[in-house]
Image (cartoon, rainbow, N blue to C red; front, side, top):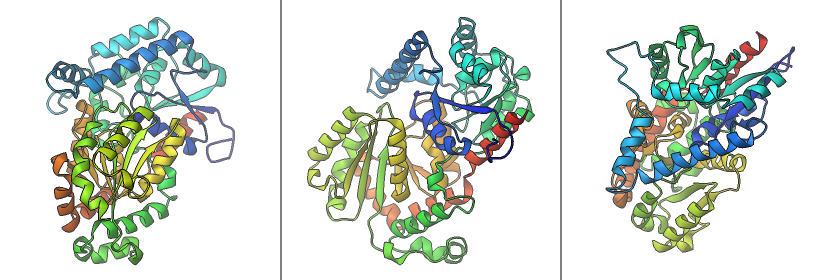
Length: 437
């Protein structure tokens, strides 16, 4: 059956990797649209035991580098190394950036030695169209001559390693979340017919179908909680009424929910310890609610709980302060998406969650880890949907100001109005065309 349930179809292999949560998060949002489960490139049935070990070494290196780059003084060389690995050149000026980089050549060398062979054997065996949210499976498949591949880009701009050594001959179809990523791929030499501006895949349970019924209902309630003095709602009264209808009066006076989520490696976790004392009074006075996200890391959850108690907020755990942690990624993504439905402010690093501003959630950004996160932050800031964090130790001072003057409500509205929302459906359309070839 096709993706729409009609006609013959080939299988889809939806492939991701646990290398930062972005690749997995995008894949799990895509899975319902493609009607297929998520496979991981470093696990069976795609990876041999030897490949699993190699992927484990790469993951351990990346997480160690991310965490150590945040340390004072000794973290400087680590930051330089991280910046070098994620380097993205200026887009303007020299438009031909097709020359292969060291990362591209290294990935090709790995493919020559059999790296990724298990995934390719699986694709041939299942006659499957590869849809991947990580560059390595796409580039390796392209190098080994597999021609039904869709690569979903998970940042607003990308490193040359996302494209094979010979981009003009590549048959990988790239689905990108931003105009800049589209221009970058063409600067790399990818043919225009293999680039598709789709947007980032967002969780379907936060959308509510083509009419965005769930998204609009969540946004309507969020605007009331964020605009506690009615400043923004008065300014855009007619526009809001036209697009959302009457706003829910039951949300008046309800404290907004601030969600803090800084990534799976926990590199910036210490920010929470800095801001918790500042938030003690508004949390105790029910002017604010707080969710701290630990992902699937029990050690991170334990540290967050310790800092909550250290700040004198232990009595509010489960009643004003919550810590989100699950045993596995599918369960975590489901719980996190449910949390986002009621989140009013998302404090995060500028990772793949940058694209979630499209849901009408204003973003507060911690500092970026790597060049790709810096450009993600810039992409959101230019669209008026997010802000750089101010001093964490004075968090309530600037959050209170933004709540009083409608600044956060305005950012929620800008994200909803200006950022793409239908990435999953558009990516599925690209995959379906390949399945019919």
